[in-house]
Image (cartoon, rainbow, N blue to C red; front, side, top):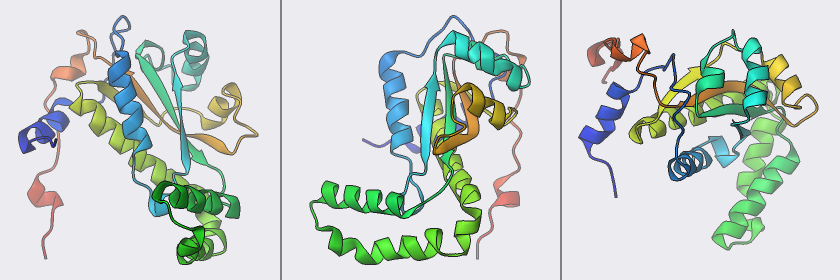
Length: 215
């Protein structure tokens, strides 16, 4: 059921930020379905899941997005382009939706969760963090991004996380300007081109001694 330590570590050693995708090679349906489920299963603060994931395979839409992505070829050449969206606000309705979903899934009465519901209200809706809720939501989206990068690597799928784009233009093209969600970060998924010179470069990371401190 669980991957070995070797499998776990081989994946991040293998992955890199793919600069050139093989435009002729597509991720098969079963593999992509697994990656979508990995996104759905991502952890989030309070379990609120303040995100949506737009999977864009339409060539015309991607061609329209590319000029607003520093003209990066990954936008049009990857197999699946994911635009990870963050929720603009967190409201009482969002908290109620979560409580209802928990109660339904676990077969309990919503009253059992009154304390949990109040925690969300006090922290994210009425509390100081309500003033920086979009940053909070973005933080959650980046957890999903990291999960996607790792899950893809474990399945031998290449990725490139992309912040070099215009969220406002993406929102306009994707008809999100009046939506509850807005563009946050992009991830191109597919398979590396044999012409990508970056694929063979040595991975550069600081050592564990530099980065991990034990107390």
